[in-house]
Length: 203
Image 1 (cartoon, rainbow, N blue to C red):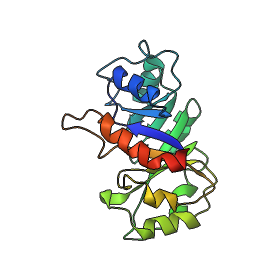
Image 2 (image 1 turned 90 degrees about the vertical axis):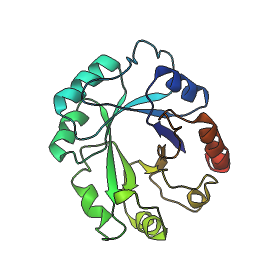
Image 3 (image 1 turned 90 degrees about the horizontal axis):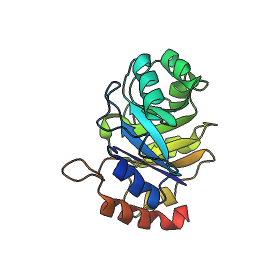
Image 4 (image 1 turned 180 degrees about the vertical axis):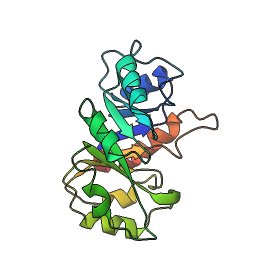
C-alpha cells in the first residue's frame, strides 16, 4: 500500500518523509506562489512530489508545474472535467472525489465524467464526516477500475478499518488532518505511530 502525506510546506519535511519510505508528498499551492522553491533542493529522492490545488486556473497549474518540478497534480476542489482534461494531457492527475454518506448520491455517477481525464482518484467525505460502515460498504461495491487513494483523516491509528477493507483498485492512503502540530508543520512522531499501526498491512 502506498502512503501519501499532504500539507507539506518545506523541502526539509520532504527529505524527512523520503527517509521514512513515504511514497508521495502533497505540497499545497496557493495560486502559482509557493513559500519555498522545491525543485532545486530535492534531487535524487524516491518520493513523488504532488502539487495540491483547489479550484485553480489552468495557467497557475502550468506555471507551478514547470517552475517547481512536481511529478503529479492533485485537484482537490470542484474542478471541471475540462480543466482536468487540459491538465491530464501534460501531467498525471489525482482527482479528489468527496462521497456524501448522508445523501447517498451514487459514487458511480461522480466517477463517470472524470474517468478519462485523471489517473488516480482520492476518496474523501463531504463535510469531514467521520467514516462509518456506510462509506466502506458502498465503496467496496463500486467498480472503479482506476487506482485510488483513501483519505486517512479519520482512519484510527491502529488501522483496524483498513485491515477489513478490500478492493482491487485500492492503491494507497492519503494522510493529512490530525498529523500536524499546532504550527501546521508535520508531526513526524504521530506519523511514525500511524505507520507502525499500518505495518501489518504495508509490509
